[in-house]
Image (cartoon, rainbow, N blue to C red; front, side, top):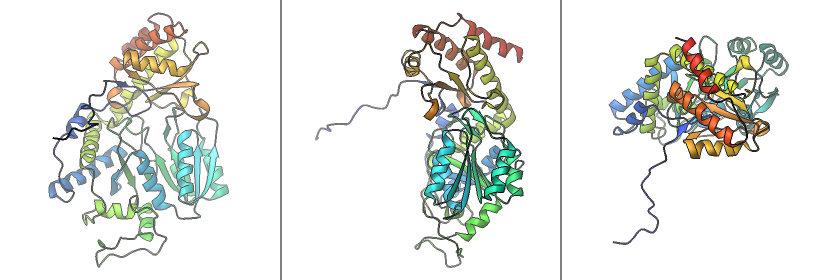
Length: 414
């Protein structure tokens, strides 16, 4: 038998506690769900699982939208599918930018050949409704594309007033909830949001690789206008639209919508194991209760932040609008390089934390407490490890102060 030159070793990744801005550790039930046998995409049992996923994510998104489904690909696939499917060349798209991921939506809109109107504010802050309305009045966009939570700044944009403003000015509202859903309050229908995309790898505590989306009938009408079905699978009774074809075949929501419908029109081969993961993520979140999960994320972040402040560290950004699942810590001047601290946390304690992007790179650390990671034991482990690492890198925190402060938060919550 011929020897294989580079077979490599069996996979045995080092155990980590993922406390960065994502991905995070998976719920054990999700890991188990990914190990069950796969089925064909048109197996009646598998189609039933697909229908269950739609029903489960309607509850997670808090919507009655019939069109609630999965896009095969990481969270960015959901963004691309939603934006490319509704943006026609020349459409005006308003992108409020309060962090790195606003710039991402600007990039996607430009590639869809939109007339992009970027609206920027200082990182570490969020938009007031009147700022959004002024831009709506001035530019009259077809679409507003905004993050709820931007992990690059750890800020959470209030949305309750923005949906009604978009309706008032005849604009669609698309929200990127990748970093926020299931860890922060989110109300698709109540807040009058037209399209939402998210990923599994944050507060849903699943693997990156599939993107839940939901969209309402206002979006469906646009998709009907742009509907095109590829030759070879087009049924004789299929009515196509007369608008410009959606440029991406894979991210064509009109065709994906038919694939997920009772028509089950072939489009792609569903990522079965990822669908099982998404299904179990939703079951875990709903079994705990959306509101209970949000409360858990708030309490955990409160304890972690109290610990950091007791250690003499300063938190980043507008305190009123911080995400409940990611905390920004300003790197103190005593620390020569923040990356050395991150490396020591990983190598010595097995804990991953993040840095940031652009103007915040090297200035803040980002610590995530999301999904399965969002637990008291992990907060205490992180604070104790942080104290030890900081001391070895020139910053002396009061011994045990971080742990004591976190314990007090948990005691007061009982």
